[in-house]
Image 1 (cartoon, rainbow, N blue to C red):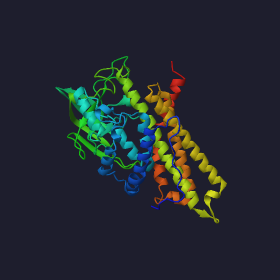
Image 2: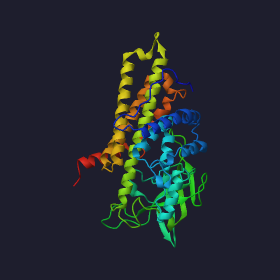
Image 3: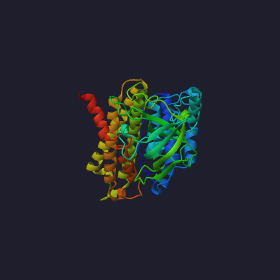
Length: 408
Protein backbone atom coordinates (compact mmCIF):
# COMPACT_ATOMS: atom_id res chain seq x y z
CA UNK A 1 0.00 0.00 0.00
CA UNK A 2 1.48 3.40 -0.91
CA UNK A 3 2.39 5.49 2.06
CA UNK A 4 0.42 8.70 2.18
CA UNK A 5 3.12 10.73 3.92
CA UNK A 6 3.21 13.86 1.73
CA UNK A 7 1.41 16.98 2.92
CA UNK A 8 0.08 15.20 6.00
CA UNK A 9 -2.69 17.20 7.70
CA UNK A 10 -2.56 18.20 11.34
CA UNK A 11 -4.74 15.86 13.42
CA UNK A 12 -7.40 17.45 15.64
CA UNK A 13 -6.43 18.77 19.03
CA UNK A 14 -8.54 18.69 22.15
CA UNK A 15 -10.12 22.11 22.68
CA UNK A 16 -11.59 24.03 25.59
CA UNK A 17 -13.63 23.34 27.66
CA UNK A 18 -12.70 19.65 27.42
CA UNK A 19 -8.95 20.14 27.37
CA UNK A 20 -6.80 19.25 30.36
CA UNK A 21 -3.29 17.86 30.78
CA UNK A 22 -4.40 14.28 31.42
CA UNK A 23 -6.64 14.14 28.37
CA UNK A 24 -4.05 15.72 26.09
CA UNK A 25 -1.45 13.20 27.26
CA UNK A 26 -3.86 10.29 26.71
CA UNK A 27 -4.82 11.57 23.25
CA UNK A 28 -1.23 11.98 22.09
CA UNK A 29 -0.18 8.61 23.52
CA UNK A 30 -3.05 6.80 21.79
CA UNK A 31 -2.44 8.73 18.56
CA UNK A 32 1.23 7.71 18.43
CA UNK A 33 0.35 4.09 19.23
CA UNK A 34 -2.29 4.04 16.48
CA UNK A 35 0.12 5.52 13.92
CA UNK A 36 3.24 3.52 14.78
CA UNK A 37 1.81 0.19 15.96
CA UNK A 38 -1.79 -0.30 14.82
CA UNK A 39 -1.73 1.14 11.31
CA UNK A 40 1.02 -1.13 9.92
CA UNK A 41 -0.76 -4.18 11.35
CA UNK A 42 -4.09 -3.04 9.90
CA UNK A 43 -2.55 -2.46 6.48
CA UNK A 44 -1.16 -5.99 6.48
CA UNK A 45 -4.03 -7.95 8.03
CA UNK A 46 -7.23 -6.21 6.94
CA UNK A 47 -6.90 -7.29 3.28
CA UNK A 48 -6.50 -10.86 4.58
CA UNK A 49 -9.53 -10.54 6.89
CA UNK A 50 -7.00 -11.42 9.56
CA UNK A 51 -7.29 -11.32 13.34
CA UNK A 52 -5.31 -8.79 15.34
CA UNK A 53 -2.37 -10.55 17.02
CA UNK A 54 -2.42 -11.21 20.72
CA UNK A 55 0.78 -9.17 21.00
CA UNK A 56 -1.21 -6.09 19.97
CA UNK A 57 -3.87 -6.75 22.60
CA UNK A 58 -1.17 -7.29 25.23
CA UNK A 59 0.48 -3.99 24.26
CA UNK A 60 -2.85 -2.22 24.74
CA UNK A 61 -3.27 -3.94 28.09
CA UNK A 62 0.10 -2.64 29.25
CA UNK A 63 -1.15 0.86 28.50
CA UNK A 64 -4.04 0.24 30.90
CA UNK A 65 -6.64 0.82 28.21
CA UNK A 66 -8.84 -2.15 29.12
CA UNK A 67 -9.44 -0.49 32.47
CA UNK A 68 -10.07 3.12 31.47
CA UNK A 69 -13.43 3.25 33.25
CA UNK A 70 -12.59 0.81 36.06
CA UNK A 71 -12.02 2.49 39.45
CA UNK A 72 -8.40 2.95 40.49
CA UNK A 73 -8.95 0.83 43.62
CA UNK A 74 -9.26 -2.19 41.31
CA UNK A 75 -6.23 -1.29 39.21
CA UNK A 76 -8.10 0.71 36.58
CA UNK A 77 -7.48 4.24 35.36
CA UNK A 78 -10.55 5.55 37.17
CA UNK A 79 -11.54 7.79 34.26
CA UNK A 80 -14.80 8.43 32.48
CA UNK A 81 -16.71 7.87 29.27
CA UNK A 82 -15.01 10.92 27.77
CA UNK A 83 -11.50 9.46 28.11
CA UNK A 84 -12.74 6.05 26.97
CA UNK A 85 -14.13 7.55 23.76
CA UNK A 86 -11.12 9.84 23.31
CA UNK A 87 -8.69 6.90 23.28
CA UNK A 88 -11.07 4.81 21.17
CA UNK A 89 -11.28 7.53 18.51
CA UNK A 90 -7.50 7.60 18.15
CA UNK A 91 -7.21 3.81 17.90
CA UNK A 92 -10.17 3.48 15.53
CA UNK A 93 -8.63 6.06 13.23
CA UNK A 94 -6.06 3.35 12.39
CA UNK A 95 -8.35 0.29 12.55
CA UNK A 96 -11.97 0.25 13.71
CA UNK A 97 -11.73 -3.13 15.40
CA UNK A 98 -8.85 -2.01 17.64
CA UNK A 99 -10.94 0.81 19.06
CA UNK A 100 -13.76 -1.67 19.48
CA UNK A 101 -11.79 -4.29 21.37
CA UNK A 102 -11.58 -1.89 24.32
CA UNK A 103 -15.30 -2.40 24.95
CA UNK A 104 -14.59 -6.05 25.78
CA UNK A 105 -12.75 -4.90 28.89
CA UNK A 106 -13.98 -2.01 31.05
CA UNK A 107 -15.47 -4.38 33.63
CA UNK A 108 -17.51 -6.47 31.20
CA UNK A 109 -18.42 -9.83 32.68
CA UNK A 110 -17.67 -8.84 36.27
CA UNK A 111 -21.19 -8.35 37.69
CA UNK A 112 -21.22 -11.64 39.56
CA UNK A 113 -23.39 -12.41 42.59
CA UNK A 114 -20.32 -12.69 44.84
CA UNK A 115 -18.75 -9.32 45.68
CA UNK A 116 -15.29 -10.74 46.38
CA UNK A 117 -15.25 -12.46 43.02
CA UNK A 118 -16.51 -9.32 41.34
CA UNK A 119 -13.55 -7.36 42.74
CA UNK A 120 -11.13 -10.05 41.55
CA UNK A 121 -12.59 -10.00 38.03
CA UNK A 122 -12.48 -6.21 37.94
CA UNK A 123 -8.74 -6.37 38.61
CA UNK A 124 -8.31 -8.93 35.84
CA UNK A 125 -10.38 -6.81 33.48
CA UNK A 126 -8.26 -3.75 34.21
CA UNK A 127 -5.10 -5.74 33.43
CA UNK A 128 -6.52 -6.95 30.10
CA UNK A 129 -6.69 -10.52 31.38
CA UNK A 130 -10.51 -10.75 31.29
CA UNK A 131 -11.60 -9.83 27.76
CA UNK A 132 -14.99 -11.05 26.70
CA UNK A 133 -17.58 -11.44 24.00
CA UNK A 134 -21.16 -10.24 24.31
CA UNK A 135 -23.74 -12.65 22.93
CA UNK A 136 -27.12 -10.95 23.00
CA UNK A 137 -28.57 -11.10 19.49
CA UNK A 138 -30.15 -14.09 17.79
CA UNK A 139 -31.21 -14.84 14.21
CA UNK A 140 -34.70 -13.53 15.07
CA UNK A 141 -33.79 -11.07 17.84
CA UNK A 142 -31.47 -8.17 17.08
CA UNK A 143 -32.80 -4.70 17.73
CA UNK A 144 -35.66 -6.32 19.66
CA UNK A 145 -33.73 -8.07 22.42
CA UNK A 146 -36.97 -8.78 24.23
CA UNK A 147 -37.47 -11.42 21.54
CA UNK A 148 -34.54 -13.52 22.77
CA UNK A 149 -35.48 -17.21 22.82
CA UNK A 150 -32.33 -18.90 24.12
CA UNK A 151 -33.45 -20.73 27.25
CA UNK A 152 -31.79 -21.10 30.62
CA UNK A 153 -33.30 -23.93 32.67
CA UNK A 154 -32.42 -24.42 36.33
CA UNK A 155 -30.87 -27.81 37.13
CA UNK A 156 -29.82 -28.03 40.75
CA UNK A 157 -27.08 -25.50 41.42
CA UNK A 158 -26.57 -24.81 37.71
CA UNK A 159 -28.34 -23.45 34.66
CA UNK A 160 -28.53 -25.23 31.29
CA UNK A 161 -28.45 -22.95 28.24
CA UNK A 162 -29.83 -23.95 24.83
CA UNK A 163 -30.37 -21.82 21.75
CA UNK A 164 -28.75 -19.97 18.84
CA UNK A 165 -26.83 -16.71 19.12
CA UNK A 166 -25.64 -14.47 16.29
CA UNK A 167 -23.12 -11.62 15.95
CA UNK A 168 -20.88 -12.81 18.79
CA UNK A 169 -17.70 -10.89 18.01
CA UNK A 170 -14.38 -12.15 19.40
CA UNK A 171 -16.20 -15.18 20.82
CA UNK A 172 -13.51 -17.79 20.22
CA UNK A 173 -10.55 -15.65 21.30
CA UNK A 174 -12.30 -14.36 24.43
CA UNK A 175 -11.86 -15.40 28.05
CA UNK A 176 -15.63 -15.58 28.47
CA UNK A 177 -18.92 -15.13 26.62
CA UNK A 178 -21.70 -13.14 28.24
CA UNK A 179 -24.93 -14.80 27.07
CA UNK A 180 -28.40 -13.32 27.38
CA UNK A 181 -30.99 -16.06 27.95
CA UNK A 182 -34.58 -16.40 29.04
CA UNK A 183 -35.22 -18.05 32.41
CA UNK A 184 -39.00 -17.76 32.15
CA UNK A 185 -41.73 -16.27 30.01
CA UNK A 186 -43.24 -12.91 31.01
CA UNK A 187 -46.36 -12.94 33.13
CA UNK A 188 -49.46 -11.11 31.87
CA UNK A 189 -48.94 -7.39 32.27
CA UNK A 190 -45.15 -7.68 32.56
CA UNK A 191 -42.64 -6.23 30.15
CA UNK A 192 -41.61 -8.58 27.33
CA UNK A 193 -38.06 -8.35 28.73
CA UNK A 194 -39.06 -9.91 32.04
CA UNK A 195 -37.24 -13.20 32.61
CA UNK A 196 -34.15 -12.31 30.59
CA UNK A 197 -30.89 -12.88 32.45
CA UNK A 198 -27.18 -12.61 31.54
CA UNK A 199 -24.94 -15.61 32.16
CA UNK A 200 -21.17 -15.89 32.22
CA UNK A 201 -19.79 -18.75 30.11
CA UNK A 202 -16.13 -19.07 31.07
CA UNK A 203 -13.80 -20.61 28.51
CA UNK A 204 -10.21 -20.99 27.41
CA UNK A 205 -9.17 -18.44 24.75
CA UNK A 206 -8.97 -19.99 21.29
CA UNK A 207 -11.56 -22.68 22.01
CA UNK A 208 -15.27 -23.08 22.60
CA UNK A 209 -16.46 -24.83 25.79
CA UNK A 210 -18.47 -28.03 25.87
CA UNK A 211 -21.90 -27.48 24.35
CA UNK A 212 -20.96 -24.53 22.11
CA UNK A 213 -20.09 -24.69 18.44
CA UNK A 214 -19.30 -21.60 16.40
CA UNK A 215 -19.58 -20.76 12.71
CA UNK A 216 -17.65 -17.76 11.40
CA UNK A 217 -19.79 -15.07 9.77
CA UNK A 218 -18.01 -13.81 6.64
CA UNK A 219 -18.14 -10.01 6.92
CA UNK A 220 -17.23 -7.47 4.25
CA UNK A 221 -15.47 -5.27 6.80
CA UNK A 222 -14.80 -4.79 10.51
CA UNK A 223 -11.90 -7.19 10.29
CA UNK A 224 -9.41 -7.70 13.09
CA UNK A 225 -11.46 -10.23 15.01
CA UNK A 226 -13.87 -12.94 13.95
CA UNK A 227 -17.64 -12.81 14.46
CA UNK A 228 -19.64 -15.98 15.08
CA UNK A 229 -23.01 -17.59 15.06
CA UNK A 230 -23.11 -19.82 18.12
CA UNK A 231 -25.12 -22.96 18.79
CA UNK A 232 -25.64 -23.63 22.49
CA UNK A 233 -26.66 -27.20 23.28
CA UNK A 234 -26.95 -27.92 26.98
CA UNK A 235 -24.25 -25.50 28.13
CA UNK A 236 -23.97 -25.77 31.93
CA UNK A 237 -23.40 -22.56 33.87
CA UNK A 238 -23.17 -22.59 37.67
CA UNK A 239 -25.48 -20.30 39.64
CA UNK A 240 -22.41 -18.34 40.71
CA UNK A 241 -21.92 -17.34 37.06
CA UNK A 242 -25.33 -15.77 36.68
CA UNK A 243 -24.75 -12.04 36.35
CA UNK A 244 -26.59 -9.04 37.73
CA UNK A 245 -26.91 -5.59 36.28
CA UNK A 246 -28.39 -6.36 32.88
CA UNK A 247 -32.05 -7.09 33.51
CA UNK A 248 -31.81 -7.35 37.29
CA UNK A 249 -32.14 -10.44 39.47
CA UNK A 250 -33.90 -13.57 38.31
CA UNK A 251 -37.56 -12.88 37.84
CA UNK A 252 -37.20 -9.10 38.11
CA UNK A 253 -39.14 -7.04 35.65
CA UNK A 254 -36.99 -5.30 33.06
CA UNK A 255 -38.41 -1.94 34.12
CA UNK A 256 -37.17 -2.34 37.69
CA UNK A 257 -33.94 -0.89 39.11
CA UNK A 258 -31.68 -3.39 37.34
CA UNK A 259 -32.65 -2.03 33.95
CA UNK A 260 -31.10 1.36 34.73
CA UNK A 261 -27.63 -0.14 34.40
CA UNK A 262 -28.31 -1.69 31.01
CA UNK A 263 -29.71 1.62 29.80
CA UNK A 264 -26.53 3.38 30.88
CA UNK A 265 -24.51 0.66 29.16
CA UNK A 266 -26.43 1.19 25.94
CA UNK A 267 -25.96 4.94 26.17
CA UNK A 268 -22.20 4.52 26.61
CA UNK A 269 -22.10 2.10 23.67
CA UNK A 270 -23.89 4.62 21.45
CA UNK A 271 -21.47 7.43 22.27
CA UNK A 272 -18.54 5.03 21.87
CA UNK A 273 -19.87 4.08 18.43
CA UNK A 274 -20.18 7.76 17.52
CA UNK A 275 -16.54 8.33 18.48
CA UNK A 276 -15.45 5.35 16.39
CA UNK A 277 -17.50 6.59 13.44
CA UNK A 278 -15.85 9.99 13.75
CA UNK A 279 -12.48 8.23 13.71
CA UNK A 280 -13.19 6.40 10.48
CA UNK A 281 -14.53 9.53 8.80
CA UNK A 282 -11.57 11.54 10.06
CA UNK A 283 -9.19 9.00 8.56
CA UNK A 284 -10.96 9.41 5.22
CA UNK A 285 -10.69 13.20 5.41
CA UNK A 286 -7.01 13.15 6.33
CA UNK A 287 -6.09 10.67 3.62
CA UNK A 288 -8.15 12.59 1.07
CA UNK A 289 -6.50 15.87 2.02
CA UNK A 290 -3.11 14.30 1.35
CA UNK A 291 -4.29 12.66 -1.89
CA UNK A 292 -5.68 15.89 -3.34
CA UNK A 293 -2.21 17.41 -3.03
CA UNK A 294 -0.44 14.30 -4.31
CA UNK A 295 -2.51 13.55 -7.41
CA UNK A 296 -1.93 15.79 -10.45
CA UNK A 297 -4.10 16.28 -13.51
CA UNK A 298 -3.86 18.92 -16.26
CA UNK A 299 -0.58 20.09 -14.77
CA UNK A 300 -1.99 20.87 -11.31
CA UNK A 301 -2.64 19.02 -8.05
CA UNK A 302 -6.32 18.11 -8.13
CA UNK A 303 -6.66 19.94 -4.83
CA UNK A 304 -6.46 23.18 -6.87
CA UNK A 305 -9.90 22.50 -8.36
CA UNK A 306 -12.62 24.33 -6.48
CA UNK A 307 -15.25 21.60 -6.64
CA UNK A 308 -12.92 19.15 -4.92
CA UNK A 309 -11.77 21.73 -2.38
CA UNK A 310 -15.35 22.51 -1.41
CA UNK A 311 -16.20 18.82 -1.11
CA UNK A 312 -13.28 18.33 1.27
CA UNK A 313 -14.37 21.36 3.29
CA UNK A 314 -17.86 19.91 3.72
CA UNK A 315 -16.39 16.58 4.83
CA UNK A 316 -14.12 18.22 7.40
CA UNK A 317 -16.97 20.34 8.79
CA UNK A 318 -19.21 17.31 9.27
CA UNK A 319 -16.49 15.40 11.11
CA UNK A 320 -15.77 18.35 13.41
CA UNK A 321 -19.47 18.72 14.15
CA UNK A 322 -19.88 15.06 15.08
CA UNK A 323 -16.74 15.12 17.25
CA UNK A 324 -18.07 18.08 19.23
CA UNK A 325 -21.37 16.25 19.70
CA UNK A 326 -19.84 13.01 21.03
CA UNK A 327 -17.67 15.00 23.43
CA UNK A 328 -20.72 16.79 24.80
CA UNK A 329 -22.68 13.54 25.14
CA UNK A 330 -19.78 11.80 26.89
CA UNK A 331 -19.47 14.71 29.30
CA UNK A 332 -23.16 14.50 30.17
CA UNK A 333 -22.85 10.77 30.88
CA UNK A 334 -19.89 11.41 33.15
CA UNK A 335 -21.94 14.06 34.95
CA UNK A 336 -24.73 11.54 35.51
CA UNK A 337 -27.21 13.51 33.44
CA UNK A 338 -30.15 11.81 31.67
CA UNK A 339 -28.83 11.40 28.17
CA UNK A 340 -30.73 8.67 26.36
CA UNK A 341 -32.11 10.89 23.62
CA UNK A 342 -28.83 12.75 23.17
CA UNK A 343 -26.86 9.51 22.95
CA UNK A 344 -29.26 8.21 20.31
CA UNK A 345 -28.91 11.48 18.41
CA UNK A 346 -25.12 11.45 18.38
CA UNK A 347 -25.02 7.82 17.36
CA UNK A 348 -27.44 8.52 14.51
CA UNK A 349 -25.75 11.66 13.22
CA UNK A 350 -22.13 10.52 13.58
CA UNK A 351 -22.61 7.17 11.89
CA UNK A 352 -24.70 8.49 9.01
CA UNK A 353 -22.06 11.20 8.60
CA UNK A 354 -19.30 8.57 8.44
CA UNK A 355 -21.07 6.82 5.57
CA UNK A 356 -21.42 10.06 3.60
CA UNK A 357 -17.86 11.21 4.24
CA UNK A 358 -16.18 7.91 3.40
CA UNK A 359 -18.31 7.60 0.27
CA UNK A 360 -17.23 11.08 -0.82
CA UNK A 361 -13.62 10.25 -0.01
CA UNK A 362 -13.78 7.31 -2.41
CA UNK A 363 -15.21 9.61 -5.07
CA UNK A 364 -12.42 12.14 -4.60
CA UNK A 365 -9.85 9.35 -4.89
CA UNK A 366 -11.30 8.47 -8.29
CA UNK A 367 -10.36 5.06 -9.63
CA UNK A 368 -7.65 4.72 -7.01
CA UNK A 369 -10.31 4.79 -4.33
CA UNK A 370 -11.88 1.66 -5.75
CA UNK A 371 -8.76 -0.39 -5.20
CA UNK A 372 -7.23 -2.04 -2.18
CA UNK A 373 -4.08 -0.01 -2.81
CA UNK A 374 -5.54 2.82 -0.74
CA UNK A 375 -6.98 2.70 2.75
CA UNK A 376 -10.09 4.65 1.81
CA UNK A 377 -12.00 1.52 0.76
CA UNK A 378 -11.40 0.11 4.24
CA UNK A 379 -12.84 3.22 5.83
CA UNK A 380 -15.86 2.98 3.52
CA UNK A 381 -16.53 -0.65 4.43
CA UNK A 382 -16.11 -0.06 8.15
CA UNK A 383 -18.19 3.12 8.24
CA UNK A 384 -21.14 1.30 6.70
CA UNK A 385 -21.36 -1.00 9.70
CA UNK A 386 -21.54 1.81 12.24
CA UNK A 387 -25.10 2.67 11.17
CA UNK A 388 -26.12 -0.92 11.98
CA UNK A 389 -24.41 -2.20 15.11
CA UNK A 390 -25.22 -0.95 18.63
CA UNK A 391 -28.72 -0.20 17.36
CA UNK A 392 -29.53 0.69 13.76
CA UNK A 393 -30.19 4.24 12.63
CA UNK A 394 -33.88 3.36 12.53
CA UNK A 395 -33.79 2.32 16.20
CA UNK A 396 -32.09 5.60 17.13
CA UNK A 397 -34.79 7.53 15.27
CA UNK A 398 -37.43 5.59 17.18
CA UNK A 399 -35.80 6.39 20.52
CA UNK A 400 -35.58 10.08 19.68
CA UNK A 401 -39.08 10.41 18.25
CA UNK A 402 -40.70 8.42 21.10
CA UNK A 403 -39.30 10.92 23.57
CA UNK A 404 -40.47 13.84 21.48
CA UNK A 405 -43.90 12.37 20.76
CA UNK A 406 -44.89 9.95 23.56
CA UNK A 407 -47.44 7.37 22.56
CA UNK A 408 -50.68 6.94 24.45
